[in-house]
Length: 232
Length: 270
Image (cartoon, rainbow over all chains, first blue to last red):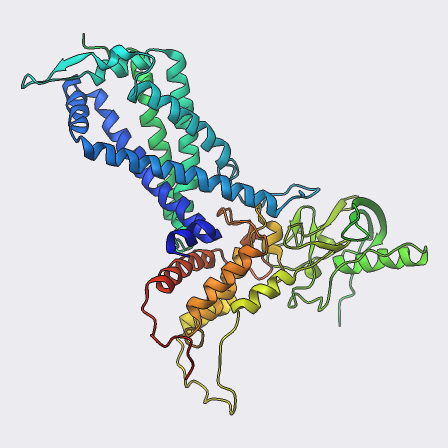
């Protein structure tokens, strides 16, 4: 069996795949957040940023396919692992006792499923714009006169729908909770964690997850609260 | 003069024990009241006393695994109130004393539960899956004959201590029993690290980790989700840091086994 086959077919291999794809996706959501925070700057910033990404052309699609592959592997391996884990303990104990497994670690599948559902909705809504095709037609003139797609207006109009904003905040909340276990867990799975610096790592993960949640939630809240307004 | 020991207050508890006559039959919890329990009794002694009563009344005694009763053999295997080896940190079931309980407690006693550890009878489970994992790679090859000179192979104190931490594993299976996924990774990690840290364990290091993990997977254990329930109940307090080390060792061995050059006469013998 080749290396990839061994990774997909062994317990530790599957864990490594979860950790590596998880690491890529953590990197993506972090970069995505940093890009989105430009909504708090004048509209030309985020519109120029969106234009820069779209002008990557084939490169953008390669990155998108790579990220999609990571999501597929992460979900596929998670299903395998979950099935194996429940088969390994078919009968529960009469007394359900937990020594120290965190709640976040015990609800990974559930938080993951909500995040996956949100991801699909989010792509349909903002990337493919199926509900509001007119978002593809709004254009914005940059300082040099280039006409680009108006991401700013799309975000403001998108998050002005309270239901969508609520689902967004819920999903990033659960994603942060998912990462509260995931970020520390992936370091253990990749074999680098030990007790000498676990406290520091856990501290970093807590700050990262709270920061990720609050900064993400600030975007729809600022739009709903009227602090970020449409520029037209 | 020796101070007289004050009389310990005896108390009563109820044992709620999993009874299962054979692997094929369904099991159920049965309550056994126990009176005149001394706080100085060990938990297994209480089971002995309850079994004496059952024998006198012509009932089937509770089957439970035990041997050394001093926490070094890894034979005892009860889950007490949902925690493998019961209350206390770094103790096996045989080192649990009745002073850990209160008068009137209902103490729920169950076998270790895992597909890879099928129940034989009552509280006794089959743990030969661990033997199979050990046979797959838990050994070194050494010269027989006269004993080598002491210290002819140098091992630093730090490495020796770390290897000894892993070697403390008594193979009781509590890690599997405590894990939400019935994973055996703490056991395998301890065995792989104990030998893999030592110079004597290097020749088989890669083959060992690959073979032991493969045997573990085939035995039907679950997968580690890094919740560290295992190390929380380990009677030898073996740390889950060894699982991180196992993961690292496994990946390195996997890549080396697939990518390193092999001799053209590999397998041909001398």
